[in-house]
Length: 304
Image (cartoon, rainbow, N blue to C red; front, side, top):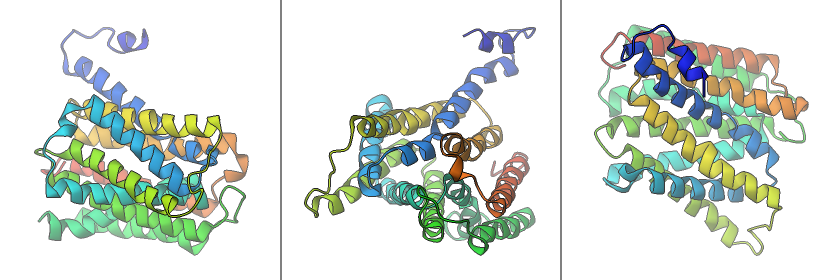
């Protein structure tokens, strides 16, 4: 508890720098919690449907109980954004079960690429010259994951298929970003709850259709999935959202880039065989550089 105080030492109370300390720490903590998603999925022995569904159910309950704003403004747009979020969550879990955590998170980070393509049509926001440069760079980085896939491992048995699932997750995530942008005046919190509820229902259908679809699982599996739903997703989002209230969007975006760096790191520390390939690292670096460039360049424009 002493570190936050030391960060503001020598500054007059009430300065802009001092006021940004707590929001920044909230965002950092939220992003750090999010980064454990890949490791939790690899550790849990549940199948993708059960893991994604139970995780989403607890995330929805956490958000609904702790964030009053999530209980209002349930419009058609909220459900549309929720459908995109549902797809992003389910595809993300499936991708982590079939390809490496690094590939999953890096490919999902290509979502801004699809946002740039769709913004002129859905948000009436024109593509600028720097956007075009970013699109080309990120597309090249994304292509590296499919041009030279790594060798399969026990934890990542189908690299090529998993990469495609991660690509589907990035497309759904882009839809979620556009929906949240459109709902910025109200309904964003409800969208997150709606998306998690939809994910829980969608994942329950194939499980209920098969006898024994819901496996018993170990106590460790249930503990992991509950912690992921309540803390790694629910609490993490709350911390990030509250930090965003008092910090510039550009700075928050750059802090958020810690997640795709930490996510594969945690997995590699526990499972050394999950070391990302050289082409995956290069592709991920190009994608993250594109995101960083957009965040910093956008800080001076109207769309920041």
